[in-house]
Image (cartoon, rainbow, N blue to C red; front, side, top):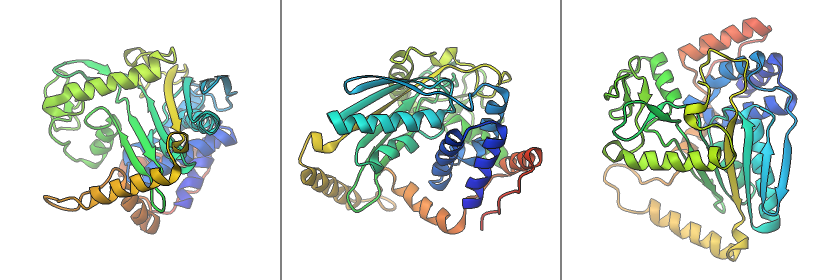
Amino acid sequence: MADLAAFAHAALAAAGADEASAAAATRAMVHASRLGIDSHGIRLLPHYETAIRGGRVNGHPHLRFAEAGAVAQLDADHAQGARAAYAAMDRAVDLAGRFGIGAVTIRNGSHFGAAGAFALAAAEAGCIGLATCNSDSVVRLHDGAERFHGTNPLAVAVPVAGGRPWLLDMATSAIPYNRVLLYRSLGWALPEATASDAQGRDTTDAERAEMLAPLGAAFGFKGAGLAGLAEILSAVLSGMRLSHEIAPMAGPDFTRPREMGAFVLALRPAAFIDPDVFRDGMARYLAALRGSSAAGGPVMAPGDREWAEAERRDRDGIPVDPATLDALAALAAAHGLRMPAPAG
């Protein structure tokens, strides 16, 4: 894992990223790869390298904050998305330390990967964290037949005394689009009711998938509504582009910024309730949840599956799919880098 992280950092630096940008992007990708969120892990490295090298992403941004009480706005200067989002959450946590709550909008950002990475940063600092963004249109509406919302993730992390944080990180689409690309690489069929062809008809063929379904299958109006919430908090509240106005992530133009927005929030539990009462409440809640009756396997809290996967990957290494392995080899050749050691 250390080899893979060092390789990612070196490739981003070679493409033109400054130290803070390369470190933040690597941190976010490794977070996703460790927790088994492969669609947003190291497979994003070639895309980020292309975006920085092409000029879409500013490799040496000047981040500018404007504060008003517990609220701040960050103009990210078209920074790599994780660079902006980690900085915004750090500021939100600082504000929560002063006011009990801190909320930061991000302007002029870019793709930041797994939203849970930034919510988790708040939980690791003792706060409840929320992170969301919108992205270019790839998800149809419920009963719709054209792309409308992005995958528009919502992520929340809550600190747990003596244990891993409660961590919810979900796309408001049935699956993230990067998973379609991953499944194409692996030759796998998509789950039912997760994607549609160009006419809006359901398909499990990753090669034919042209748009994603909203979360919820027959109740997809719920997923579409949650996508709208992410859209409002990240794009409308920051004055940035709506999903259908954002240039496609896949290009072909990698020279112009995408002008994306995002939103992060931090809550300091001690501002609302005695810390011991909060800790006891979380402990009782999680004990009851994990001890509840199960129909087929253990009942897990949000994050349990991911933390178990992180333990396995810390031990065995991070697997890399064939298409990503080829792309990493191309980066190694282009920048004169040594390929990271394979997992296992």
